[in-house]
Image (cartoon, rainbow, N blue to C red):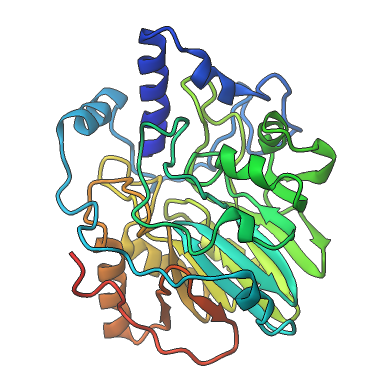
Length: 366
């Protein structure tokens, strides 16, 4: 289970109680049109994860909801400012157009400059990861650059439709500056409801791919779920992504619990130069929706990637662990085992193939 699902529930219940139900109903756009056939879809029309005997059950909704209502996590929000490296358009344009660059924007949001062309992954620029901006997880830090400062985007990649990955305000602000959108099955209708021309959106089932602006994309499996309201759970697909630019290969996990699919991805599409893997929002109450830090490391090993890059932390409070616990635990393992860990600061540019000294930038921050 994911905190954002409970935010959707909260939004629905609160707005209904004060006669403002339309505020949440607006995010239901696109439910009427059924996505194309998929082996991931059951007879009930809902998408599902592959059968997995090791899958650990999620606690009941009332037990989880009660915990969110009555338990206050300690240390989940930083007291000290998160360091942010400020970016501007001139800095981005000066990056080597022959190389591949990854820019951390926060949480799972990234700007890529792939051989001179710009891409976005799961961009969220809003103050809150929520259907409304007066309720829900609030950012720990500002983005390293504003939406207005972003260059024209050749491609925008989405992993799934949860609010911390698909942000309506960001999509609406960028819809005239994005050439093409690449999304899992069913998410086109979400974007169309946000004013995006559906002709510019390509949908993918797992293992389907395409080529655009010199980049080869493949939607790959993930173990998660989807939904933006009480009524639409798993009505759209979720995915990880394999991105190849030139001779370099980037893997982005999106949100995922640990599962056998990581080994399958490596076998079918490897080698991987850098794996951007989920690291945050895990909990014993929903053990199969997000990976623990130890599972993140195992996924990296399964993928046989050359570098481990941590995402899905340091921007929103989406669980009950401390804000730095995800990075602490992986960094400790990486230090013991000599793993090539990458934990860039917000706004830092990582250039593939270039030397870099990794730092625990969060050390000493409360």
